[in-house]
Amino acid sequence: MSTSQISRRYASALFELINEGCKIQNDLAKVAAVAANDEVNAVLSSPEYPAELKRNVIVEAAGGKVNAEVDRLVMMLAERNKATLLPEINSQVETMIHQAESQVDAEVTVATAINKATQDKLSKALAAATGKKVSLSVSEDQSILGGMVVRIGDRKIDYSLRTKLDGLRRVLAS
Image (tube, rainbow, N blue to C red; front, top):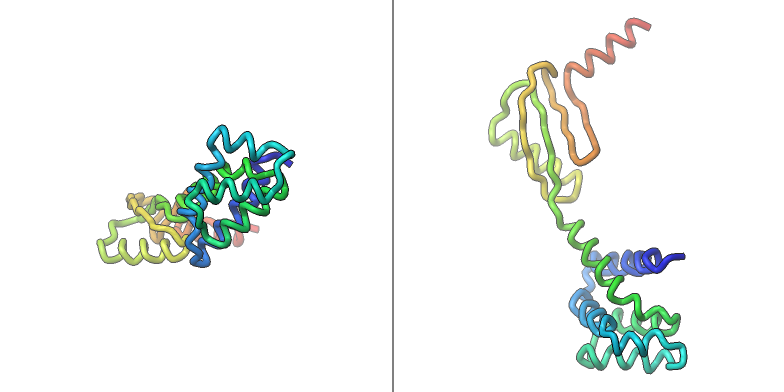
């Protein structure tokens, strides 16, 4: 298993803790910065030093006091000779947090113009469905006849009258 896969597993578990309300980001960043230091990294990658010493080096250099979950993580990684992965784990956690808080772009195509209140309702509904902030862009295309077509990323949700009529036409023709 590659180190990035291992780091991703730890990062996923930490991300779940963060989502549950555990405040570990600052302490994780501190221990990751310490582990990224070349001199500390030499100690962490050496199998001749015991896990407890590796943990103490990281925690003491990070300020002496870290969250209990981060402390357990550091000790577990030290016991498995994987403490050098801390910077990569922290980076992946930060990426996951950024993606979770990010905004998605939604492109909505309608047959006729919709008012601001309807756009706001649609934006709120899409935000609830995606769990992310939604940036809405609305365009008009009279060929869809009615309804709307919503594109979010690579997903397309087609509620257009044109698609419904085409489906009905195929059913009746068979």
